Image (cartoon, rainbow, N blue to C red; front, side):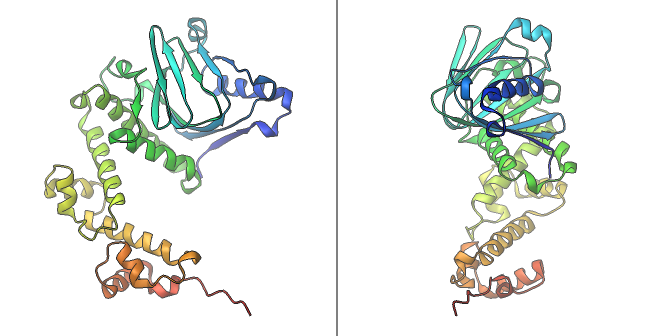
Amino acid sequence: MLDEMVFRSGDVPTADRFDRWRDLMNQVYAPMDVRSDHAADYRAHQRLIGLGPVSVWPGEFQPLVFLRTPRLIRQFDPELYHLTLVVNGSGGIALGKQETTYGTYDIATNDTSRASETWVGLGTAEIVGVCVPKAMLPLPKGRADQAIGRRMSSERGVGALLALLLTQLADNSGQYTPADAPRLGVVVADLVAALFAHTLDADRSLPPDTHRRTLVLRIRAFMEQHLSDPELTPRTVAAAHSISPSYLHRLFQDEGTTVAAWIRRRRLERARGNLTDPALRTVPIHVIAARWGFTGPAEFSRAFRTEFGAPPREFRPPRADFT
C-alpha cells in the first residue's frame, strides 16, 4: 500500500490534542499560526498519503483558522501550491485584499509563498487536500500564481477529474503499491496544471504531454460513466471528445491497450463485481450482462470465460443454508 501517516485526536490525551495536531501540520506542510475556539478538546482525523513529492491530505476537523504570515514564510517556505477539495463544509481564504469563500464541492487554492488567512466555518469540515511543488507544474513561470485564490468547481470539467482521482486515492489507498506513488504524483500534478490553465483560459500554455495525459483521463472517466450503454464504441467516444477515431486509437496505443479492449475489460470487471455480490445472488446472469452493455448472453459468457478463466456462474456466491 502507499506510504501513509494517520493522526486521530481520540488517540491523544484531551489536553494535548490541539497542540499535537498543530505541530503535525507545521511539520509536514509549512509553519502556520493555528487557532480554534475548540482547542480545549479538539477533534480531528488527518491522513497524509505520500505520492513522491506530491502529498494528498484526507481529513475531518473542527472549525479553525490558519495564518501564514510574512515572518513564517521567511522562516521556511516549501514552495507548494495547496488545493483543498471541500467534500463537506464551508470556509474561506484571504490573500491580501482578495477574499474568497468556499462551500461543498468547491476547490480552494493557496500558495505557501504568500501571506494568507484561511478559515473553516461552522461544524466539522471534511476535505481532501493536495500539495504540489511549484516546480512540478508544467506551466510558464507566474501563470499558475494567477489562479491562486480563485474558487474552482469539482463538479465539471478538469475539476471533476481531479476530484475523482483525489477521492479514489483517499478511499482506496490500500489498492496501490509504493512503486505507484511517483506515477500517481505526476498524474495529480498534471491535473492541477490543467485545472489552473483551464481556470485562466490558457490551455494552450500546457505542454503537449500534459494535454495528452489529461485528455486520456477525461476519456476514461467518460467511458466509465457510460459502460452500461451498449452504444459505447470507439467511434462514439471519439465523437464525444471532438477527436478522430484514429487519434483516439493512437492515444490508447500509447497506454498499451485499445479502446475496445479497455471498455470490454471494465464491463467484465463490473459484471464480475455484481456476480460476486451476495445481495445480487438472485439477479439472473443475463440481466447483469445487459446491465453492463453486453447485447447477448452467449457473447457475455464467452468474453467472461476468456477474461477470467471460468464461466460466470462459478463466480456466484453459494446459496445460504438455513437448515
